[in-house]
Image 1 (tube, helix red, strand yellow):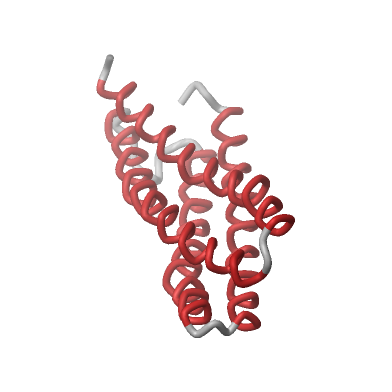
Image 2 (tube, rainbow, N blue to C red):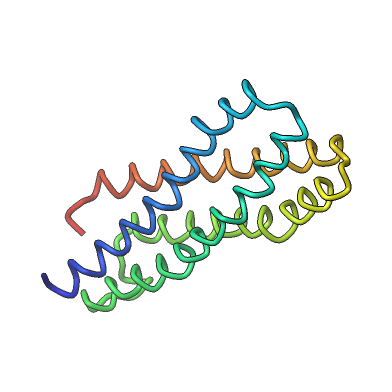
Amino acid sequence: MTIHALIYTLHLLCALIWVGGMFFAWMILRPAAVSTLQAPARLGLWSDVLPRFFRWVWLAVVILPLSGFGMLHLRQQTIETAPHFIQVMIGLYLVMLSLFLRAQLLELPALRKSVAAEDWTQGGAALARIRRLVGFNLLIGMTLVGLAAARPTF
């Protein structure tokens, strides 16, 4: 296996963890939690699930740019000389990162505080804000995957 293939594989695995995790949370876990759990239990579940998932997202947040720029370096390219779709991917990564940071640093603490205080109204509002951020990030992430799949020859 070449170094480029190894870095590319690591890059894809991190994207899979982040985008796939959001897809699972949004499309599978959320509807199941809504249909089977009352609000206190549902908010408690998310208060426990999200920090576990976010630890994996942090891994992706760090490795994705390192591996991406590593691939550019191996091809002796810079951001300025990279194909336009790579520049778009970098920009969308930054948008996804900002949405993730908002969820992690601002909204998750509000959710956890509300759950600890058994303030289900505020907890529900915090979870709704996290859900919106994850929804936007999922759409952007799926767009990125589509963009990467459409340009596999990089």
